Length: 282
Length: 282
Image 1 (cartoon, each protein chain N blue to C red):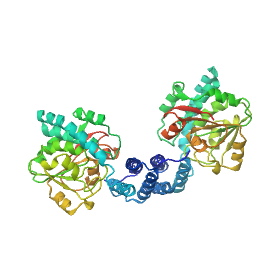
Image 2 (image 1 turned 45 degrees about the vertical axis):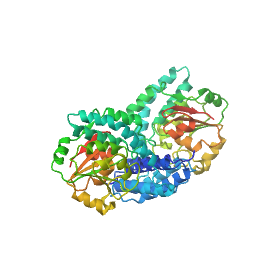
Image 3 (image 1 turned 135 degrees about the horizontal axis):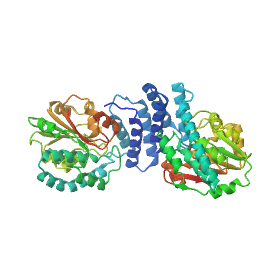
Image 4 (image 1 turned 90 degrees about the vertical axis):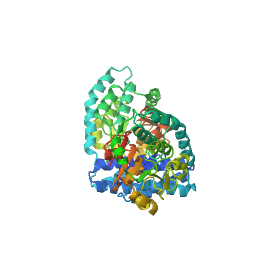
């Protein structure tokens, strides 16, 4: 998905939010904003939007000297999600269609995202879990169920911290021994890395790898060879979140996207309105 | 009022709206956006925000070759306001306090502004006129009434087209023969120029001058000497709209600002919430 002119004000807004999140120093914030503006002025609009977010956050980490400014927020998201986990596990144990409910929870977890907006409250998230079956959902779980039958190499591309705990519920519904979970290769925003996959207990359920990249999405050109080999070998890929959609929607691969629509341009692209919980099949 | 980091995403958003308003050519829109980003990256944040808007619109006019891209929108605003005028005149004729009601109408007219947002519908505007006395208002009209007694040289700084028709109602309540109305010196956004003052019939009520500047506010350093002389000689200045507030709030002069609060930073500055109709006295 290419970058559009509409992304530009959004880059500026997100960069300012990120700068204020990463540092209280107004001088550093201003330096970041000026650098971002210079970079966006010259950017290649054929690249997907996460390329700019990757650049912004690299610059932010360099200017603040903080290698992982979101670490404490990420811990909060994981802790919150782990608190909510047992109740969701109970609901899935009682469900007539555990896979379908696990898909819904996995998408609900995608609300824990500091990219599009910094405002995800515990109360909002708890509410979105409690009302998950009432939230607008589009997609055909049967397509996923059918694709899972016979899939030998399932690659699960995680997105955010907290959300990765919810992913546990869905991974438990996938054929054991056939799933590899991939996380980001280095800290970027509140996205999940290997540390978070371990916190979520995913290593007990599947092989966990990282993709070698610090982009908030899956830029294959920026990923490690080892990851790309796995990606190409997979016969089913479940990709979580908008960042993965923006970077992979034009890649020829057996991709199922699970995401909450948080941006109207992504919404236009998938034909769904803002806030929709979506399973986008190939 | 200085520019803040919060202004930056807003500059980008407004520039994109303006570029799309002025041309359908996506190449020109992209060129404008890249130029704006480069300019904002280097801007002097000690300048008030209208300096950047002035730059953006100059660039837009140069790149599109259109000296007045908002002319047709401006005509629409004037026409709409002239339609609404007789009903407001009747209300003022019946009012126990005509000055107070004229102040309210003059501020309600400030909703006709394509700067902060491109979305001002006829229906919204009609509604805001019909419910003007119910809309949140802050300010002490008595302070203005007292200042008007004894004021010999009253300068009225107009803001937008359409709005300038509403200003007619307030100018009719001011001491005859003592009022000079000043408009922008050249087209900028949907701001009023001499042509619009004539359309509103202001030349029948007062002397009308222009300020010699194409900034969407009153940047004294950019105004003509003739205007600045009038400004300095005035013993009462009524300044309409946020652009005039942003450029004059730190100028030592007998200023009364009449505006609708459309930006949270201006709101913080005057201590009022978004949407408030305000008379800000010296």
